[in-house]
Length: 93
Image (tube, rainbow, N blue to C red; front, top):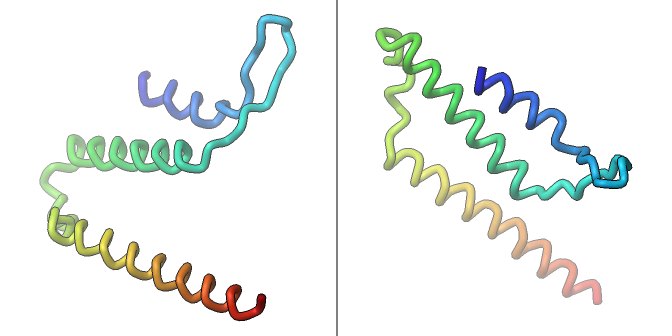
């Protein structure tokens, strides 16, 4: 029930009702959207863990050190892409 209402909230979060009965579109914060997707993924992994506890040997590679390594690698790749983009834009001007 709570998971269903969370999914409905995430799908319908682009409109809010004001007191003057007008429908306004809210600004979609990219960071908030990413955090919501992450929390939804965590909820599904927890649900999977509760339902299929004997078949979780497929997720043995998910360890804190592997997650930290992945975050560092993705951060380095993003930094290198942005740094090269900055250098090329600086050379144009």
